[in-house]
Image (cartoon, rainbow, N blue to C red; front, side, top):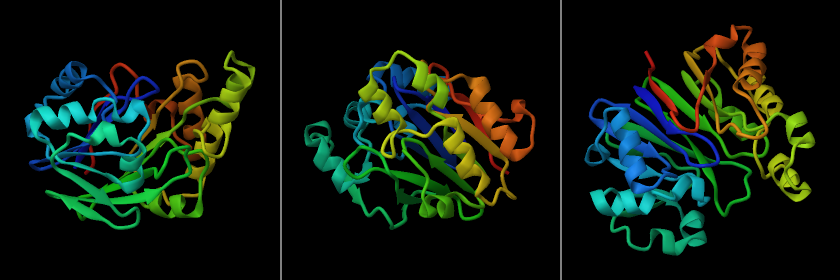
Length: 255
């Protein structure tokens, strides 16, 4: 099993997960031409995708979903709440599947387990991907940790973990007060410290990869995010991957 990012941040998100001939795209927040180019950078054609899985309805996660699905006849999986929140965004997709937030489903060789997260969206979920032996857990767009989140992320082999902002930078930055409250609130985004607190509660005995994701361009740095996670794992900061808005990150293989 391997995974790679098309890009990660407030301007667009997309994560590729691949097992054998199965390739699934988690979210697509980029325009059609940009999405095709970002996929090509990773050696994947849109027609090679088995489908798109959606976390929630915010534009940086769904802006390109419908256009990509329509043009290349791709199926889409999402929650009922996400579909209800933006019905026009998904109206013309011919192959669409509503998922139960607690029920696993399969796409090709991948088993995909959704789980609910606290975020200011209608029915947001994140996912754990498995090939039966190895597990890739993804947690972004969550305002805080929960016991259920910790249970879902524990004992994974790879983890993509939101480190959206540094709390001091957010507090002292230029955002309006209302936006600071939203981002830093319990339905907003994880700070470096909150991500580190979640990580400290996990069983990391199988962890081969960890990538800090969804970093704020205004309120964080890759050094601060990597430093917060490396302190928990007692590893060098260079071992912590950081997803970039423009480049994402290249393929990482889970052994």
